[in-house]
Length: 140
Image (cartoon, rainbow, N blue to C red):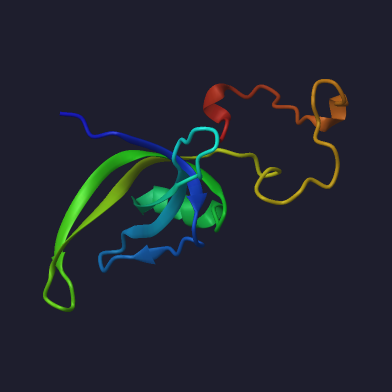
């Protein structure tokens, strides 16, 4: 059996980092994900609940905010509970195993203040020197 979910969406609120009684970091949030649609059809959006634990939770709460575009790889989990009125409920959520940036910091919702560097208009000073860095040294 296989339970794998890959999503790209925008956070619907600022994530709030919490800690369990035994000190484990956790963050719960939702993302808005557009469904595919055909020309002329109204765009539809799904709001999907996500839970991240430990270092992923800390990463999300530090670098993402409402409106940020986020990439998530994880699995679907269901929880059964009884609500305050005594009704049995089932909650579906995605447990995030891997989280990543989908847009650059420059694209993070704010309009660029100048024309972004590209191969056609860039100067050698527009790019940082990585020196002897290997792929293992890069933060992504």
